[in-house]
Figure 1 (tube, helix red, strand yellow):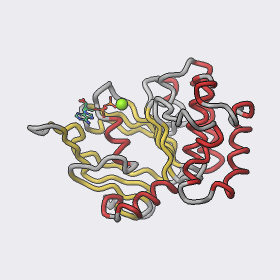
Figure 2 (cartoon, rainbow, N blue to C red; figure 1 turned 135 degrees about the horizontal axis):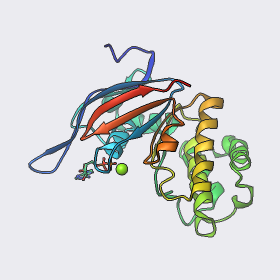
Figure 3 (cartoon, protein in one colour; figure 1 turned 60 degrees about the horizontal axis):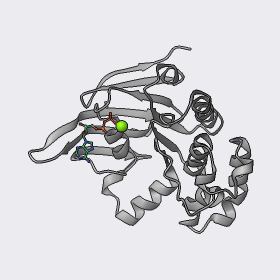
Length: 232
Ligand SMILES: Nc1ncnc2c1ncn2[C@@H]1O[C@H](COP(=O)(O)OP(=O)(O)O)[C@@H](O)[C@H]1O
Ligand SMILES: [Mg+2]
């Protein structure tokens, strides 16, 4: 299996991560590729390594060993400034907790990734479009504390999408939401995948949400236990 082939838009090879002294390995030789436009769920028990894996795939954390190759580039061999820009443009990340900046309005939060590269003017129209699509029109000028949990998370999703990333990673994005808002967030992911061909990898504990993915990867003790493509 040649994981560096361009048919994979993200791949990892012999990925390993250890923590502590003596080191305990929590990701133990993970290897898979995601094709452009795939919609994939990542499941596994608490502590199985889902978050650690997602952080490494998105460059937020460095592996102890192995490689992550994004669009043909080895993520951890790039110079830090270049890696930072690459991530800002290509990768969106949604956490379980929204991590919006409390002193900024929803609109300012969504435009933050664009502001980092001086594109806030250029992206304003797209931001407005996302607010309208995500049913957030009345939230533009609100601060996170003035918004509901569902609105906060949809704002965080809009922020992750503002640069039109090729990849969207989401770590239990519905974990803090009630059913209606969780459904709404999943519906947004599905639409972004279909309409923008964004590659999406999301972690969930909910079997119904996992079933919405076209492919399901399951981790057990830091290894891929199963990797199944759904037949729809
Ligand atoms: N920064 C860290 N320092 C030490 N141990 C960690 C750290 N991050 C994660 N771990 C450990 O790695 C294992 C996998 O954690 P995690 O990736 O958060 O699992 P999951 O997201 O599947 O619940 C757990 O045993 C956790 O305690
Ligand atoms: Mg986790």
